[in-house]
Length: 197
Image 1 (cartoon, rainbow, N blue to C red):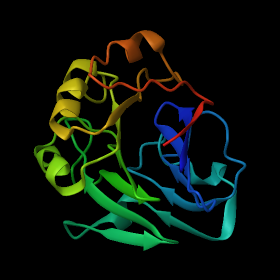
Image 2 (image 1 turned 90 degrees about the vertical axis):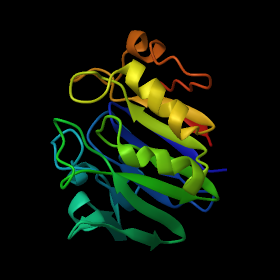
Image 3 (image 1 turned 135 degrees about the vertical axis):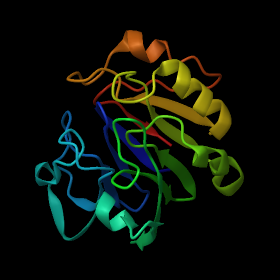
Image 4 (image 1 turned 120 degrees about the vertical axis):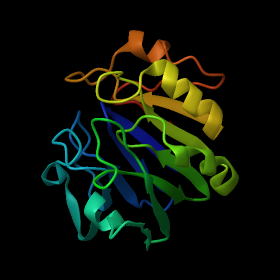
């Protein structure tokens, strides 16, 4: 089974059964010493794009928002057997032309990394298209949707497990915020915790 290490804030690392290592939005916390095969960046705010922090394999592939969304088209990639599909992410603080989320399929597990966003029209398509296993949703309520809106998104998306992230600007994690994410199937992961997916 693949594993997910939550590093804190909006940063996490996914490792496949075969040891393919994927970092998403590197910036927060620790755990950047395992060499990366793939680095994904949802947008260019400084708390999401610190790719220089990551130890990289010689053939590491970096996919940033400007590669993932080009000329109005959301692109798909297959890197070392991992399928990566860019999807819309936006709100009043995040330009839809400059931000993406990703659906990552690794070892047949489908993971939606929403990036920085609030509710999008396109979220309605995620259930019929992907039947997601995990959704990582921001809940800070300042730059993105709050926990209540994120719970409504989770109900729409219907992933098997919903993980709250990006809770309190400047902090890795906030348990009080995490517990406000009132969904049927929450999965609260603290920084430095790694789970099997």
